[in-house]
Amino acid sequence: MTTNEALINYCLRLGDSSLILGQRMSEWCSNGPILEEDIAMTNVALDLIGQSRTMLTYAGKLEGKGRTEDDLAYKREEREFYNTLLSERPNGHFGDTVARNFLHSAFFYHLFQALKSSEDEMIAAHAAKSIKEVTYHLRHSSEWLVRLGDGTEESHNKIQESLNDLWEFTGDLFEMNEVDEILIKEGIAVDLAEVKKEWDKTINQVIERATLTKPEECYMQSGRLNAMHSEYLGHLIAEMQFLQRAYPEAQW
Amino acid sequence: MVNEDYTIRYTKNQVWEFLKEIPDPEIPVITIEELGVLRDVEITPTTIIVTITPTYTGCPAMKMFEDDIVSTLKEKGIDNVQIKMVYSPAWTTDWMTKEAKEKLREYGIAPPIDGTADKGVLFANGPKVVVCPRCKSKNTSLKSQFGSTACKALYTCDECLEPFDYFKCI
Image (cartoon, rainbow over all chains, first blue to last red; front, side, top):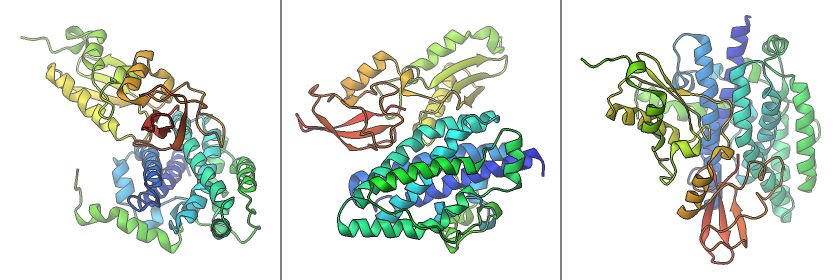
């Protein structure tokens, strides 16, 4: 594998995770529990989709086959997506979404914090830009986690269950393979084991404040690195790509 | 015959003057120059390259900015325009001019306080005091970190009871 091939894959990982989580958040549009949250969640969606555009455009450029961000978003099959398993988890109830976004935003926050000093100029710029937005996403989901965890008995139990249900998908966030090895050597990628240490600190702090219990270590699902997904991604992609599939090359 | 070489026909300052008054499509009282979105103008013999930077990666206004730049220059007879999007250094509300912040306030949006006011803390409830742009009261409270657009938070004034947008610091 060449450095360029590794870098393309790395950009797809970043871009796809933002895209899929952004698409999930878009599903809340007009369905939020209260107006302010409807607006907040769709704003988060907009940020995430914006972030994915930068990385998918860059991946297309590195590939050199003339594929645009839209080609990569709308014309790839399920087994060509490198998003995190966590990002594709269904929205469930509001608490499920809060817990998923909390775990994922904390991951992005520390990943981008580390990638700010990447040797790849575009990745470094992307990380420095995105972290400003992700900080708000993390704060938003953290505050809700605390409000629900430290709320009523019912909200406490529900959000604890959400965390427990999602836990088996968090191992996938930090898995690495040859792509990481090549890029870490070049100073482009970062060691996800280091990111995990920071991630642990952040989530421990918030979970404690929310009077919740960190889920116990369990069997961890994996798949992101090989573009293997849960049954949910296919449905999400079918909806996301419907228009381009039904009316190829349709434009605004 | 008109000389088509852009480097002879225009200076960088001239082109900058053409562009600097383009308003923000969502907040029409401030311009792309005051906002700090317009970063650079480069003139080559055949193309004018305008460098801009996004406020937020997903900001829908960016496409409008691009279209407005192209059409503004077209009106001046410049057909070959290239828009260059740069991400580094990342846009910050610190680039917003003092005058722009004052215009925001008059328009009813509380301007960003300073670059570090909102940052770094997991549970900060935004900056300590956001002054109501209408009645100038300091007795205000945060309703939501996300307002009518991603760049704004929603506040309510506890004095005049009006809701208002606060332009977040990033």
